Image (cartoon, rainbow, N blue to C red; front, top):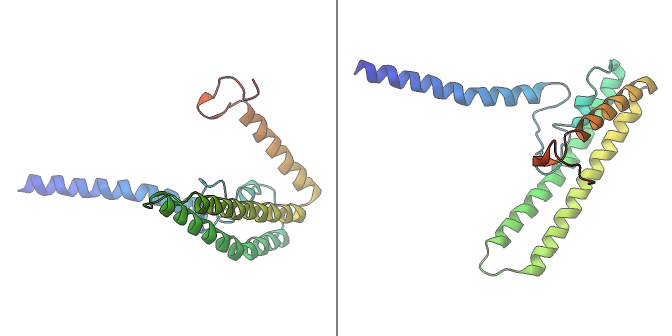
Amino acid sequence: MKTRTKILSAFLVASSLALAVPLTAQAERGMGGCGGPVAMHKGGGMEGPGRDGMMRQLRGLDLSEAQRDQIFELKHAQMPKMREQMKVVRGLRDQLRDAATADAYDAAKVKALTEQQADAMASMMQMRLAHEHAVFQVLTPEQRETLSKRRDARSDMRKGEGRGMMRGGPDADV
């Protein structure tokens, strides 16, 4: 009986650690820099204000306190709008899923829903880019130059990666 208790205890400790490690990593990502607990999904091509790529890029630019305050205000002014738009996208995605599993396929309804979803996603992208532009305007010319150099270096690095599973293989242009 003692052996069984020891095994059960070891299993509980191991499973607790297995669950805690990913949650800890998630929490650390959300707490770093300007990111917050609001996590927009990456799968949809949207980084959003919660996991904003622009915010990560600002690290190391030696922002003044006034710049930090301005960027904070810009980011948090956008959050409710982005959240509402995300609700629209999720609702449309749910409707599309329901349409796919319905007894009868309604092509006209699916077409309308996909067009609405594309419009909603485009609207989110436009909001994100407007936000990035506003943040960029807060930066000094030197900070803008540093940011541009970082983006160029990252772009150059990505060009060498290839596309998807064909990394290291032929370029997309070939």
